Amino acid sequence: MTQETGGFAALELHPSIVAAVLATGYEEPSAIQQQSIPIILAGHDMIGQAQTGTGKTAAFALPILHRIDPSKREPQALILAPTRELALQVATAFETYAKQMPGVTVVAVYGGAPMGPQLKAIRNGAQIVVATPGRLCDHLRRDEKVLATVNHLVLDEADEMLKLGFMDDLEVIFKAMPETRQTVLFSATLPASIRAIAERHLRDPKHVKIQTKTQTVTAIEQAHLMVHADQKVSAVLRLLEVEEFDALIAFVRTKQATLDLASALEAKGYKAAALNGDIAQNQRERVIDSLKDGRLDIVVATDVAARGLDVPRITHVFNVDMPYDPESYVHRIGRTGRAGREGRALLLVTPRERRMLQVIERVTGQKVAEVRLPNAQAVLDARIKKLTNSLAPLVADAESTHGDLLDRLTADIGCSPRALAAALLRKATNGQALTLEAVEKEQPLVPTSAPRERTGDRPERGERERRAPMPLGEGRARCRTALGARDGIAAKNLLGAILNEGGLAREAIGRIQVRDSFSLVELPEEGLERLLTKLKDTRVAGKQLKLRRYRED
Ligand code: AMP
Image 1 (tube, protein in one colour):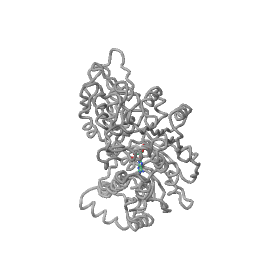
Image 2 (cartoon, rainbow, N blue to C red; image 1 turned 90 degrees about the vertical axis):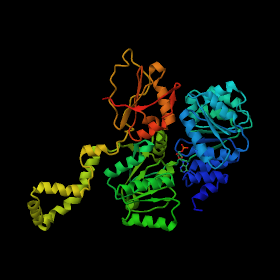
Image 3 (cartoon, helix red, strand yellow; image 1 turned 60 degrees about the vertical axis):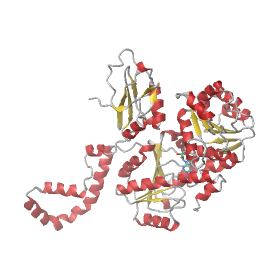
Image 4 (cartoon, rainbow, N blue to C red; image 1 turned 135 degrees about the horizontal axis):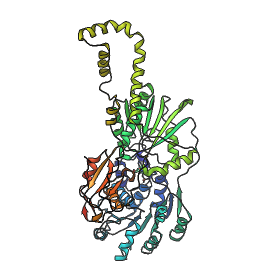
């Protein structure tokens, strides 16, 4: 067993849960997990102050799975989440962690889907119910006993639930559950309204908060970049083109991610390798030595594997996946700027992780400026600069060593020196794209931070059908469905269905235009075919969505 697996094993979770967690590639518990799991396992009520990105879902899901009895076919744990999107996400996380616990079933209960199958799944003995408060109250109105056997309650993102006006629903739900239950509350902030709930409904709760002591990081220039989760690899490839780095360390969360990113980089010709907890100690040392002496330029690592790594050549740290807490952010970026040198740290932030970015800024007392993904022109300029830099030193004496050969070749081929030089350039650049058009064709990405139209449903009077579609955002494809306003469709229905069934982040979806007899939706060009296949059987307002790529001409 490696030292890292000991991290989860030491938490005294059921072996089948530890096995499932390790199979997902987690190497060690995050700070919130380390602190919360023993408390929840011991049966205490708890208030956890943590936001998305800290690993809070596993912090409650793992001990709750440990505490339920899989042989009892009745609801035992209820997780309340503010939105359908989060409820589905949490339910999926439970399913992942329960993969090696036969007999455990999870049901997600949320609005916008028929109630019958949800109630049936509960009655069929799902032990874990993940629900939005509104829909759960609808179920309680039909069957007030539905929560009578639930002994564990988790309020996830409690502050968001209150903001969405679920206070009254929460009270109804509390009443429908046994008073002896265990209650765990997670919230990014603890305003008075949340403290009041805790006061009324939690018994002697333990408090868990990720310590956020101020840290200083001076010599390191920091920036962040908004990016969709499924576009991180493309974003890294593009950033590498323009960043002038000597050696670079890229941090990701899982072992699998180290392997995936390292092989994507190698495929592009970078000297890159993965460093994770599965790699034997002597092999790790070889990787680090190679990074030191320049046989490698990029190492893709998990936090555990990069601990203590001290390589003065490292000019850049890429935080490809968000760190779990500000301390580990500070620790990661401290891999650069060694020995008094300057360093640069880039952080990729997905839309849901914005809050974590704010926490990092608060703790480090520094603003982490936003930068945009380099555009095609910047990539082209960087490529030409590299070519210039590689050729410039050769020019000085090339004429004396190869001038005569040039004369002979131009004469033999019967071409101008310019034509021959151009042919040699083509050869030297190995077919690399060196025009703007060619660069633009490579990996189109959805700009995450560009201002975007709201997706609210505001049909304009009279002329819905005649209006020309708006110009398409960069990196997006327009798709069409034959469902429109006359089918009772509003933009929010389309948005909800695509978000949930397609597993996209909200920001990934561009404008939605609902017309009388059809609707247009802007979706990321990258991965579009896969997305459309995923949405193949999706229904909205009882009708098949049948989304297809739409071409204006
Ligand atoms: P959450 O804060 O619960 O939204 O989790 C954020 C992300 O971190 C999710 O994608 C999890 O799969 C991942 N994650 C949670 N715990 C760990 C861990 N101990 N090691 C690696 N990844 C984790």
